[in-house]
Structures are given as C-alpha cells and as structure tokens.
Length: 110
Length: 114
Image 1 (cartoon, rainbow over the protein chains, first blue to last red):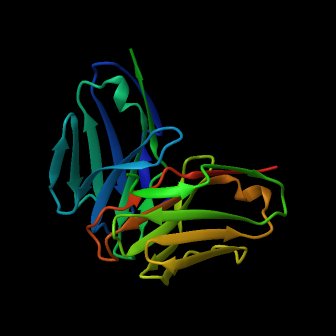
Image 2: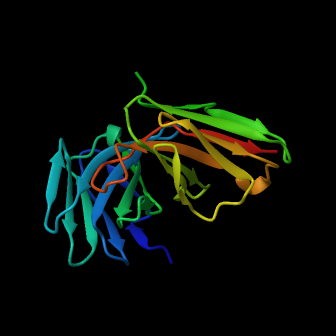
C-alpha cells in the first residue's frame, strides 16, 4: 500500500455542488502540499499546510491539516467546470522530496 | 515567461533508442527534480539536484542519467529505451532543499515507446 492514500479515487459532481478530497499519510507529516493537474499540463501549486490545525483558503478552495490524524482535506465550494482535473497531495517528510498520493480525478458536470 | 520549461513536450520513439529530455528554470532556484508519472497518474521522484550536485537517486535504472550543467538546467538522458519507460516525465524546481517551499513543475514530457 502507498504511504499517502487519497480518497476518493475519482468523483463526479454537479456544477454548483461542494466536494471534498481526503489525503491520509501512514508516516509522519512535516508538511502537506496540494496540487492540481489538468490533462496535458503540469502541476499547479494550490496550497501548502505545515502546522496541525492549519487551514488555508484560496477563492473557493479550502484545505485543512489534521496533524494528529496525519490527514488533510481539500474542500471545493460551489464547484465550477474550471475545478475539473486531477488533485494530488504531496507529503513533505523532510527527505528532500515530495511523496505524492495517486490523485483524485474530479469531473464537474454542467 | 515560463518558469519551468521542458522540451520536447511529446516524444515517440522505438524501443532500444537513446533519447534526452531537457529542463530549464528561470526562477533562480537552487534545487531541481525529475519525477515520473505512470499510466495510473502516480507521480514518483526519480532524481533531485541541488546546485548541480546529485542529492536523490531513487532506485532508478542506470539507463537513466541526469545531468545538470548549471543550477538552472537539469537534463535527463535515457539509454536503451524499454516499453516500461512510457510515461510522463516532469521536471520541477524549488528555492532550496529546505522544506516548506513548494515545488514548481513543468508541463511534462510525454514519452511513448513503440
């Protein structure tokens, strides 16, 4: 099993509805990064969380870090077609790299 | 201006050939990385360099050889390409090796082995 598990693997949401993606680590987290990937493009940095209980928001996207549970969630409010893509969480374990989850594919239906 | 640029974007070649992928960053970062993304979208680190010095070599076959002529460039040369090398290869950079700094990614190179 992977060290960083993302759920769900994929989801389809009606435009205007909310959605949540979870990322759970089996090892100690020193930081958690969220990226978004569109087909044929690179990874776009969304947010970085470092402290337990930390919460950050950008436009309609909010991410939280539960350090005790070694878990992070990404929440999108009132989804739009522009939110479609693959969301990846990356773990910072202070080993000079990011370890990524397998990604969550988000489809937004009009 | 593109921050992290990779060339080529697409690469289709025969098994057994040798090919190179180039990466350049204009962010002034000290650290650069190569990641491989397989068909299941799983992204895994291959190499990292800091100021032209190899830091991470994550059990990658010897057929893969990174080269960093200066800290703004990190190229990837692959010898004797195999079918399993088909993937998307991403270059990334970060200000330094210190944690709490996001990595910036290129658009990827889609390698297909025939």
